[in-house]
Each structure stands twice: as C-alpha cells, then as structure tokens.
Image (cartoon, rainbow, N blue to C red; front, side, top):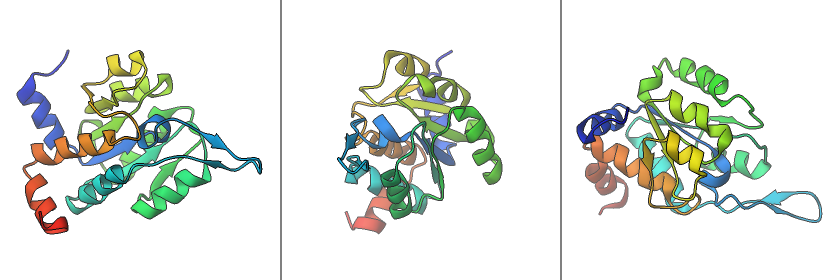
Length: 179
C-alpha cells in the first residue's frame, strides 16, 4: 500500500542510510569497454555533491552493485563511501549485512535501483526509489520515481527530498556552499 504524502515525508525524514546501485543510478547505465579491457563510466557531479551533503547530515551512503568495476570503487573512495559491494547477486542479503553494521532497521534505510536485480531490495527498505529511466518493474516496486534519469542527478533529487523532509536542506546548503 502506497503511503500518503505525510507518511512518505515521515519515511523520508527517518532515513539514516541511503544505498545505491551503481550502473543506471550513479551512472547513466552505459559501459565503455576499452581495447585494453578496462572500462569507464560517467558519474554526475551533482550526485557526488548530494553524497557529501548527506554525510554532513549524518546519513551514511553505501553502494551495492551487481557488476564490478574499478571506476566504481574509485568513485566510492572519492565520495567517502566505505560500504561499496560489487558483483552482488543477492542484494537483500548484502543490504542486511550493511544495515546490521550500522544497527539500523530497514525502515530507516532507502535504496535507489533501476533494474530487475533491484526489485526485491526496493520492496525491502523503508524508501525504495528509482530513476526516471528505470525498468518498469523497478518503477513499480519503488515508492519514489525521480524526474531525473540515472547518472543525471537522480541521486541528488532523492537526497534533496530526504534532507528537505528532515528540515535540513537549506542550512546544509548555506553551510557547505554559502547559498
């Protein structure tokens, strides 16, 4: 059952951990494989800023991805994300280990995913979110579908909603950016 607007805002305000898929959420889902076998992906700076703002608010961020790529590990390090789990087939099991380390109930956690492998975790957390270009099954399982596409600020959009629901957005932006 979908929560009404005030229930959704309360759930957003309760978030203490945001878990993200990598491909299609932090990136646009494209994978460039170079002749030497390495790969590259495109990350959006607005999503990185969102992770920093969440940290300032005391909200942890983690990555749980079905694929593995060195560039995802590197981006996680750049953003200070300590929990970066790749090549994961059972995302709920991986999530349970992460949330247990933080001592959180699933209701205090959000997850953004975009594809079939993400559906069970989208349904398992307090806030399931999907970017605008997610697969229909992921959108159907999510409580929130962002206007932004994956890799184009979807994480930022969700982070803003969380921080605004907590009443912290304006103060954090003023503190970090002087705006």
